[in-house]
Image 1 (tube, rainbow over the protein chains, first blue to last red):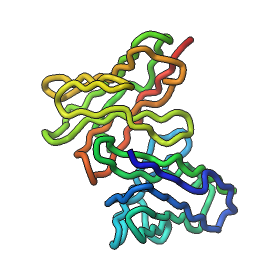
Image 2 (image 1 turned 45 degrees about the horizontal axis):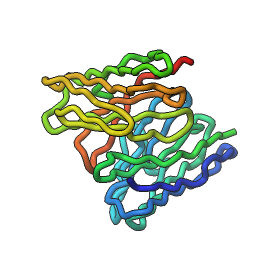
Image 3 (image 1 turned 90 degrees about the vertical axis):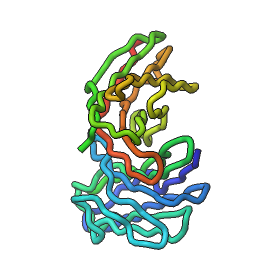
Length: 113
Length: 110
């Protein structure tokens, strides 16, 4: 299966600032997915990132708050903008891999103070 | 909303088989059943998936009913490291998003 490197693994940020999370895959993939997991909750899809086109956002998530870049087939970034304490969550990237379903990164644990 | 239903929690004695049920009564003909687990604070880990036949790999077995409306994940000899939240998900394989439900929190008891 694909190996995903996600950075940073955790961060503590001041409200009003922005954090960019990186997701690097060891093989080329068509689509990458970004999820959010709020404390004690299940995973919620934020958006699907395609190379060469704008990301597709799920209901309740907007590009101004969560801009996504997908410059090539092995890399993507998610930015959490103008953060508030409600953005404190684990953010995960995921890719689909033939024969293994979907592989997830280890996540970025974000705390906004 | 998630299309599968699972019990919120289960306990299993260490060394015994853990049987985790999942209902997916609205599954369509080309959707697979996927099972993932999430150990505390880690990313979800793929376990197994199937379409209509029973499947087995080094981690688990997946039993799918003939009408495909439910399935059971079997961990044959549960260990303490199997304590996790287990998610059952319907999806067309490939470039389709996964929709996570609330899963089953499995606790393995020494």
